[in-house]
Image 1 (cartoon, one colour):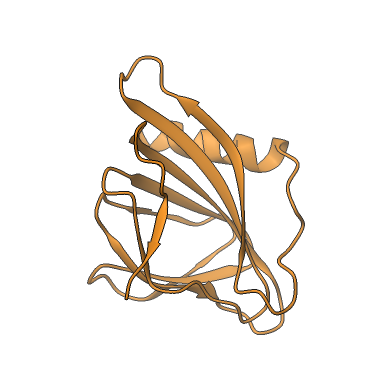
Image 2 (image 1 turned 45 degrees about the horizontal axis):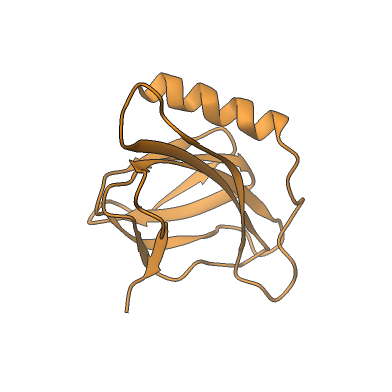
Length: 137
């Protein structure tokens, strides 16, 4: 399953037209690349989003839809990430991680103050889950 999702991520990243980078002053830009129900898994959908971080930009601490399993693939640059009680880690272009359903993503930011970073996040989730990201207060 992980290999299939990774292949899909790379194919989408290389074939879909997307914004080139985040604009100055914004934490991030998020653009939906793909959305479809999974025909052989009733009630499940796959959604891919591209997240662009300007140099030094970060996302606020957040959770995702309760049913969402997430596969994140760094397309360019370097992204610093911490999920649940795991270690804080820097992922570089070509590296990836996953997030289990119900996870808290406490750190998600561009690891560089001078270069942009871009990642592709693929969600496998219940089709009825419409809100992908919720800030942690």
